[in-house]
Image 1 (cartoon, helix red, strand yellow):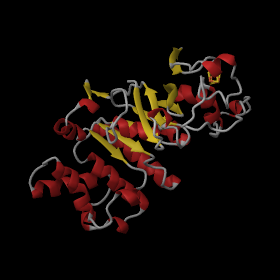
Image 2 (spheres, rainbow, N blue to C red; image 1 turned 180 degrees about the horizontal axis):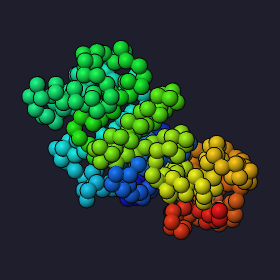
Image 3 (spheres, rainbow, N blue to C red; image 1 turned 30 degrees about the vertical axis):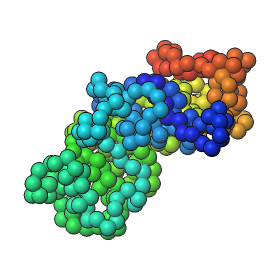
Image 4 (cartoon, protein in one colour; image 1 turned 180 degrees about the vertical axis):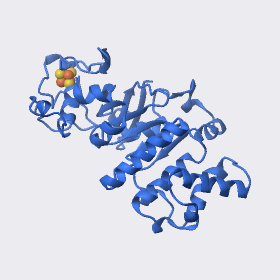
Length: 316
Ligand code: SF4
């Protein structure tokens, strides 16, 4: 709630001269148990920073992240280490996120050892079990990451995230680097694992066709703010924020009647996150902007089922 992450930039002598980038700026968001919540928006909108602040991989500037009633950012080191078992992340790039000098068994054993999983034999057995879970043969435990394809490497990244039976997994562009057919296989695996292990996913992606296939609900971010939250169906079929409508208009539509529907044209540059416009942050690009949009920032409010931050939400 009220979650912010600001990065100071520049070194002005006076505090008032220093600027900040408001990467995440006052986000209120609730993720429901066992859902897949997708976070979307153009690059630089703050979605990756939000995912990391939610896991406390980076510290917040303001606000709280409540997980089962506890504010993660208020926990001491020992309590946070214990909590880490429940909160995991799968990164975009399986090439960069797996240590090339370690065998798969050591990559998978690392999080198990960090949480004192058991004896060497128990850890080895668990590593084999993890490979089974992600559809890879146990015999591959002795291999190195470069001996696997991109899709297999991402399966190893998923196995590593699952090592300590997490409940909440952030998938940060987890399938973006993969070919479309491999992407579909990894998405199916993630869906099966969600069923079996009762996982909750935060899915961070710029790929809206993946969101449409995979997510239950969607949050749309623009310049550090959440501008719309709704079910996947509502967001794709009836976007109410002009920015969401712009994003959705770039996605091929299965319904030919919707294809011809009039779409707003965006004009103007994306404002600098260091020098945000007054009022609604989208007003410099919004074809529907009016005087109030330049002076008052709209709050996220409930508009018949989903929440929108706009003075004049679209009526679809
Ligand atoms: Fe456009 Fe105004 Fe809505 Fe912002 S508040 S999205 S400028 S109509």
